[in-house]
Structure formats: C-alpha cells, structure tokens
Image 1 (cartoon, helix red, strand yellow):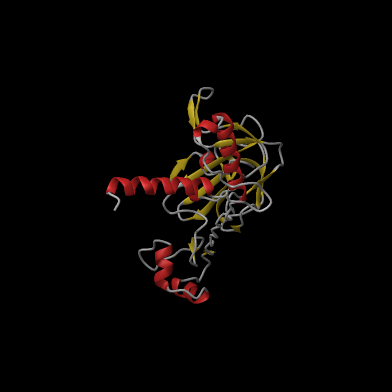
Image 2: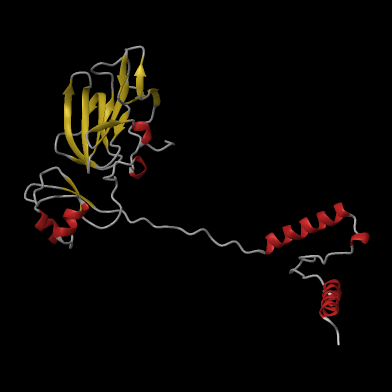
Length: 261
C-alpha cells in the first residue's frame, strides 16, 4: 500500500500529464482561446507572452457586451395658480390628494396665491427645493458672447452679481425656465427688464432690454421670447444682464446653465 507521500506524488504526476494532453479551447472562426502551458525548456518567453496576450484579446472579442442601462426620469407637471384656484380644486383637476399637493410643494397650510407655481403630479420637478444646481434645468437666454462673468470687477470697483451676455441690439431674449412674470418694466440700473418667478424658490432677471414682450402676471414657457437685447439703464453696450436667485440668494448663473449652448 502506498504511503501518504507516494500517493501525493502520484496525484501530482497524473495532474501534470492531463494538463499537457488537454487540447486548447477553440472559438468560433478563430484560433485557440487559451494555450496549454508548455515545458519551460521548450519555450521562448517573449513569444509565449505574446501568444497569451493575443489569446486574451480574442477572449475579449467573443465576450458579449451588455447594453448600458437607461433610466427614464418622469418630469412632474407644474401649474401656475390662477384666480379662484384652491388646493381642493387643483386636487380634483389633477386627480391627486390635497396632502400630496402640500407635500410636493412644502406647504404648511392650505393657502396659495395667484401666480404661484405648484407641482401637481408625482415626478422630478424642473427645479430642486434643496437649491442644488445639478437639479436645475435652465436654458441660455440669448445667443451671444459672455462679456462679463460673476465676480469682482476692478473696472467698476464692485462685485458683479450676474452674467453679461453681449449680442446685437434686438436679439431675442428667451425665458431660461417656465414661470410667471413677476415684473416687466423699468428699474434703475437694470433699465428695461423682466423678472421671472419659476416657483420653488427659483427666480431669474434679465436686464438692459430694448423691448419687452411680456407683462406682469403672464405665464411663460421655457424658451419663450420675453424681451430684446438693448443697452438701457447702467450699460456700456448692448447685452443682457442675467441674474439667478435661489431661495432669495443670488448665485452664479454659470453654475445652473448648460455647459454648451
């Protein structure tokens, strides 16, 4: 009877013999997938490594690639409060509960006001109540060149709380997001300007216009023409001065606008 050492050596010998006899795996239309390991005294190391690299490449080619998963985001429906609207009537109109309306819009009571923008369906709102810029879906308001960004300007020795976009006089100015016109008219410094309330704490302002195409209380869609570029008010040339406020605080418009126009 074989002792433990002899049984171990016999098993090793059998395993090595089988490994050298196994035929290489094949892939459809190609060569061997993986090569058996040759005896060290018969191999050119560089050639052997190249062969194994080629085999690994063939393995990657025949490995199926799974399609990238896609996530569909459902956008919430927004409603601009009109005269006579109540939470009860809106709940009936959109087939939701009053409790859901209060939750979606962070309402502490049942009071709503004309011009207020409310979320009236489940889904992701156009803007985030948390104030994070990554959740905002804003558009560039005008096709032009950024002439002055957010920050301190030594020329005027004051901080610039907005973004100036230069364009020829008369160039259309578009609403960066759907909302309600909070103000349309003349303001010192701004010249002719439009202020939009988009609901949930987001507001935008467009200054130095030459013409205004909207009036206070009017609802506008994202990308709708609201004014034309001009140089009214405190201005050194035709441009639109864009301001963005989140929960009453001015923020850098560049952080909430798309990287490309």
